[in-house]
Amino acid sequence: MVEQQVYLCNLYDYYHALFTERQRQYFEDYYFENLTMEEIALNNHVSKNAVSKALLEIKNRLEELESLLGLYQNKQHIMKILDEDTLNKIIDYI
Image 1 (cartoon, helix red, strand yellow):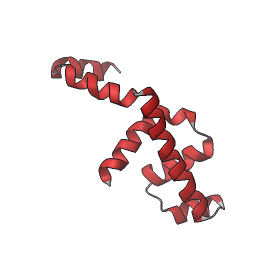
Image 2 (cartoon, helix red, strand yellow):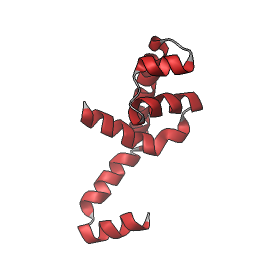
Image 3 (spheres, rainbow, N blue to C red):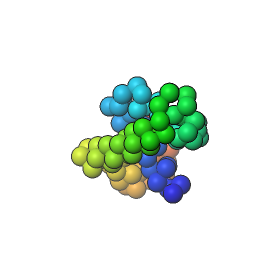
Image 4 (cartoon, helix red, strand yellow):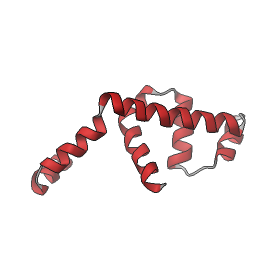
C-alpha cells in the first residue's frame, strides 16, 4: 500500500500539470496533506463518492501516462546505470 502511494506520488511529480486544478487539489489533499476522502468532500462541497471516483480516475490516468511516456521508468533505468558519484552530481545540479 505504501509502495503504491510512493509510486503514485512519483508519477504525479512528472504528470501533475496534465490534470485540472480540482484534480490536483484532490490528489494533493489526499496524498500530501493526508486528508480523508470525507474531509476532502466536505471542504469541496461534494460527495465522498465524487472524491473517490476522482482519485481513482487520477490514479488510472497517472498509470496510463506512465505506460505511454515512461518518464519515471526512464529515470529509474538511468539511476541504475550511473555510478553513485555521477548520480549525486546530477541530483545536486537538478
